[in-house]
Amino acid sequence: MGTKSIQVSEAFHSYVEAHKKEDETLGETLVRLTGGPRPEIVAGLVSEETAEAMEEAIETRSQNQTTSREQIVEQFEATNDA
Image 1: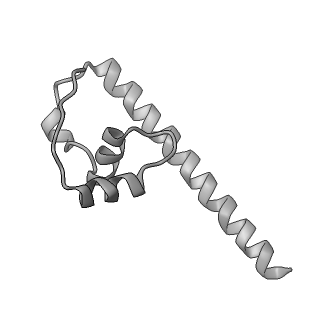
Image 2: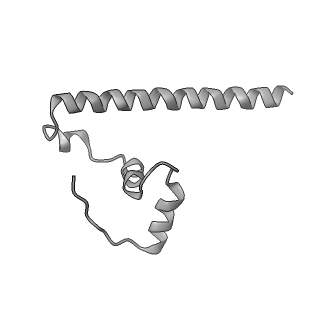
């Protein structure tokens, strides 16, 4: 996939940079913050095999985030109980 450069204000760049996760590129951060392209826009652009792999990756990430949230809640509750 190719890349494009875009011009944004310094304030917007700072905003995106502040929301960037350690393992993300700025482009990945923008996709995450904006929700990425709507599925109906990209439908048919990828093979069924690629779409299935993407779905699996999204599900795995979602499960990992849920586990992380549960761990944080448990840690918070343990701290409050102490």
